Image 1 (cartoon, rainbow, N blue to C red):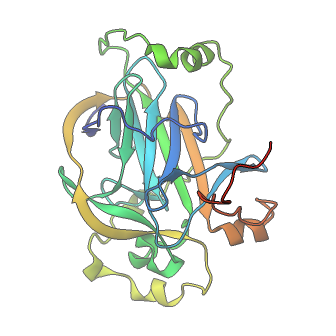
Image 2: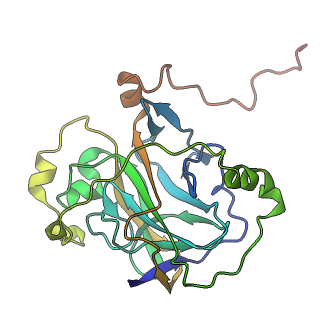
Length: 276
């Protein structure tokens, strides 16, 4: 089945899309904290991957296509499709990535030219809770689809700077992603409110104090995309990437991280150069 999808307008030389903290096999996923200007490290615990977010900080999701052909990434945050706002399902629209391309997703898609920023927020202020969907707050998911082989895709060699990682991918030595998946909702659950005027007050009232970290609906900014055609090779994704997130203190309490939050580096620690 052919589906009309959205393709990101890629910024040349995206600085944060490729990272040692990335998770994935066909597509690497990482999260960049735009407020503190750093890629968030990933912690593995009981077969799952986690990052620690800071309430009030803006963030972006970095996607990097490691394959030598187009792929489509259906991206969800808190089980909400970041393009359509529907409750997430594999069959929905996504971002099409060129071979070996990097892209940064800055927020909830509002139009072909604007997004509303992703911002780490208290549970009750998350977009999912405010639209009546509190059950899956605290997770980022990517369902990756290959293009149908009937489409003729020119072979594009891996960039020289990425030769090592491309060799690892083609040899099958890249670590497999976490064996997690996003539950597919029923067809009737996909019609959801689209504006803040339709916030679900009951869900917000039931939001627990000190609940898990979520993602809010921030300010709008420019982020351009175009439409493209993409036919999936299969109705089931070739890869599903799952990345959980919460505050550092919550991850520490759950035993996911084992130490107190590391202190921020200090640029002027002493007045003179000590011996090594």
